Length: 129
Image 1 (cartoon, one colour):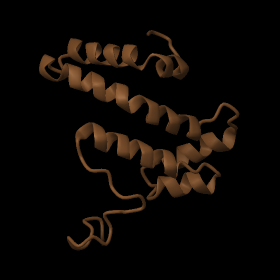
Image 2: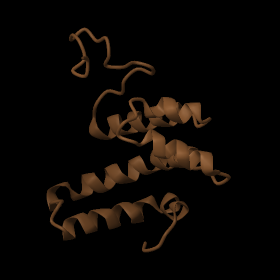
Image 3: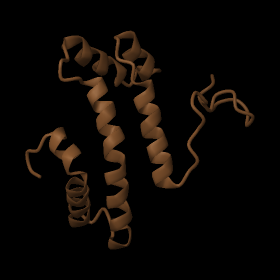
Image 4: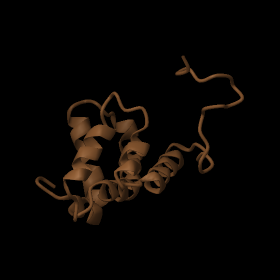
């Protein structure tokens, strides 16, 4: 799959997932005991990931999208989703779909929409001053 586009990956997610796992095994990052489950997880995560990417970087993008993403992914940015939304790039739904897909892949219960760890019953956030 050398020099392939996102569209190619979207059309053949199994081929891409297999290639990633092979490369990880070649570099001894991934052992044979988890190869199949890793391949399946990558394949399942591809559709919501591509949906998120396409929303952040649409085909008809302009410079404001690039600048908004640069700012959103800066280490100084406290709320990247808010930064993107202020630039007209609302990826809230896509991020939620990706979170839910990852939760399903890992066997964890997806969080209810709109819930956060802040203000939980466990006490103050570790990030609190």
